[in-house]
Image 1 (cartoon, rainbow, N blue to C red):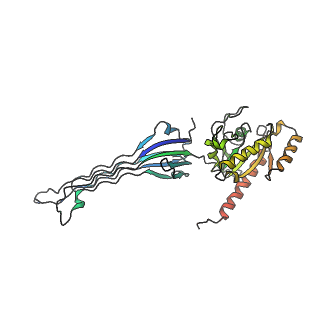
Image 2 (cartoon, rainbow, N blue to C red):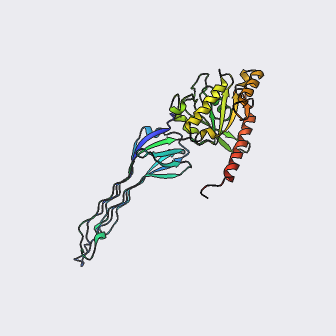
Image 3 (cartoon, rainbow, N blue to C red):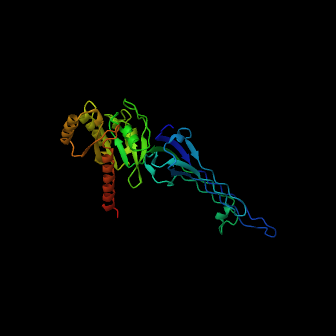
Length: 342
């Protein structure tokens, strides 16, 4: 299935039904008063978040969505039927922007969360509403109002607690396939991963934690170079980052600094996100090389350094233990930190 994480669409609420002009016409009531009913309300366009979708692909084929119009009023003060709402399923993690104002309309995170993106128009008033002492037989009614019309941009930000970051060929896809049931495409060349991959990693308690393998970033990614900021936003929701550095790279220190620089340049607090620094591919280098890099990295970062081989599985148990511990600590801090608005 093709992964699409951005779409632009147009939505329109249904028009309200027209009010009508009618009079009470019954036997023995020759001068019946006004009895024109109101129009029904137009339907609304409503987004509903679902876990059953992981892409915005459907919006590549359908870009215009309109709810049903309300029905016109009827005689004998009957109100017209309301128009049906247009219900549209979107993946959890979808952020909705108004294209004209660039404002965020809503952020659909939890399953079954709803968002009205285009409200239906109100129904027009029938002539019975204009009865007065001065006008006992009003011969006018109001038309229904148009529904709200909007141009929207949808952006999908994956919902994952742990994000895997690093330059192309750092071994992120191999790692996520080693610790979860995810099976991303893996090969020994850069940019094998062209879309984010999600994998559920089981804790010892049996609970699942979602890991996201973010496509390889390169210098200038925050400006859209390479696979660019199209995928940087997918780590905005993560609580913990695993920064993979390949020890077989030409300059592992430069690789590390490039990614750190891109996180800072992208902003949104990514450079302050909790990280675990991991040396990968230790099976391909000797102990002396590992020791040398540990000493060099100690001069530029205070982060604890773990060593693994995603291919052989060496060090993975220690890595996951560290992940669970850090997530638990983050949860404790989040609970203990008072809200500014409480």
